Amino acid sequence: MTLQNWWFVLPSLTLLAMPACGDDGGNTTGSTGTDGTTDTPGTTEPGTSTTTGDEPSNPTVDTAVPTTEGPTTADPTSEPGTTTSTTDPGTATDPGTSTDPGTTTTDDTTTTGGVEPGPENIPEIPDDGMPSSAHFKKIPLGMSDAEQGYWEYTPPGYGGGEKYPLMVFLHGIGENGNGDSELDKVPAGGPPKLQKNDQWDTSLPFVVLSPQHPGGGCPGSGEIHSFIEFAMTHYDVNPARVYLTGLSCGAIGSWGYLGDFLDEQIAAMVPIAGDGKGAFMKAQCELGRVPIWAFHGDNDGTVNVSGTTEPITKLQMCDPKPDAEMVIYPGVGHDSWSMTYDLSAGHDIYTWMLERWKQ
Image 1 (cartoon, one colour):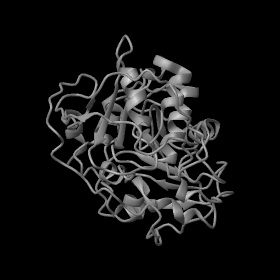
Image 2: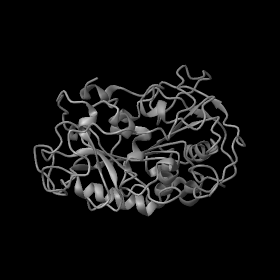
Image 3: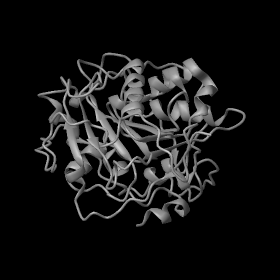
Image 4: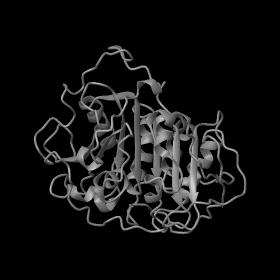
């Protein structure tokens, strides 16, 4: 698939049709369960799963169940192995690029006064014949100005001063670590797993940064905000095209961040198996200032599916109705992310992100 074709491909979505819940309860920072949630597994009926072929922001719903289902389980703590990057991980190279990080580049489509958003601002990605792992390396704590160690993926052609979309990925609780000797835990799931294993589509234009959360629990909103600020000032990224995604504890952190900072930094968010009830309680319909496409399995015994169904359903009742949709996978447990990130469930979250930008 070429980049030029992405603007005309709309993801096939699976949406949940259900009435709004009257309970705004929920806590995204609890201490039970493997991801710090306090939900009791299986206490919320997820409703009837539906499918749609329309744009997520304007769905047409029927009663068919999804025709594509991914695996119901995965091992989120599997050994990530070693990277095959052509750059020695942990070297003291500037993690952003060959140009001075944070500078503004002028060309035919950008100006020093800011970046005008739009599909035309996405650079062409050349085919350099190299696998994704060749563009993937770890940046341990202390080797950059970031307050966390992280993994870096930059697309082919990056480094010439053009501005690229930025995706920040937040891992699950099983991958928490010290940002240095434990950094190899991060590529156990999500985009960094695909990038390490050469399963990432190198024609995608994202700079992808995957920070490691230190200590216990889920990442806090201030921690996430600080890392995004670092990324935006040290990498050649388009400030109109900053996207946040996370799985499980990372999705819980993403929801919490959104409740505090809304659209201050990001253009869209994809939380998977998270809990946004507390975020909606805090920000209410203001959450809809950022487009959200949320995913969850209705048989999730770790983070209850109500963590997705309640905030999205309530957002859909706001006036005006925001760009907030969800996919609830029938019969799927906690790992609803593998089939989402590798696109095997048929929902192209990457094209969806690129179709949204800050005005």
